[in-house]
Image (cartoon, rainbow, N blue to C red; front, side):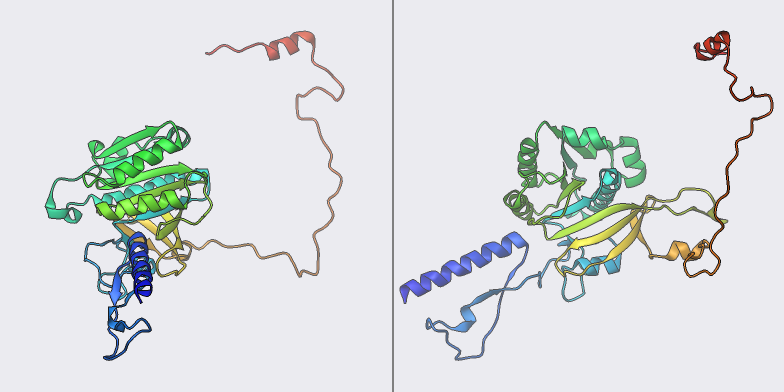
Length: 351
């Protein structure tokens, strides 16, 4: 009897620990009166861990403002909160190719802009800074964000974005783990490249656990990475989307470049619902706007050439190609003189 009770308590402790790591909350299910387990304990004392957060604070999730995306990401099963990205958790933002690093960074900065809004800061206090951590390889490949552009596009002051450039990935992970436990930061961004062996499931579990303890989000930006098992409950795959024309009072301005757009694919979420969304960032209002897939093509239809299969008359065979000398050119077989060749090869002067 004693050994059975000890084993049961051990299982419950492990379940609570798993629930804390995954961001879930244990629920106590009430059993019918008189129901007794094999160990002689009432079934009402059993704690069952259900995946997902059934009871959460209103500020537990970061809403993107796009209802379909927030619902697909999950978080609130009742539908009152609208779901979204968990704030106190590790979230992955992937770029499939190296050239997608700008789109990945822009989307992460958009999320940081939503976090830094005064209405989202606890007790309406001062706006906390964001720490961006990366290795020398990452910043050498993708560069640093431009301070003036951050203020114009995302409303982020230069002093609100701190950078930490580490020589090795091990140092970057150490800085990220120490920063993830600090409540003096609004968010932590860790940018890595590829699928390094050191960034394994254990390392992401530590980041996720410390983000939960501090109640602050940690965004893991990955350049040219393949999806792999991590402790992050959400994984978004970001790529650039074609920008639409700039909107004016007279309508869309032809040939112009409008607001930045991102293609978002849900690779992992609590609801396990796949989805693809095209979001436009509004730098004036600091919000996302959704562009329906195919909407731009419907506004500006482009004629498409029909396929060539199934036709009765194939194209005629190409004929002989003849080369004709241009007017004023030397006849075939003539070679330029030595003086002409030297003048052609000599460097030219400016002016």
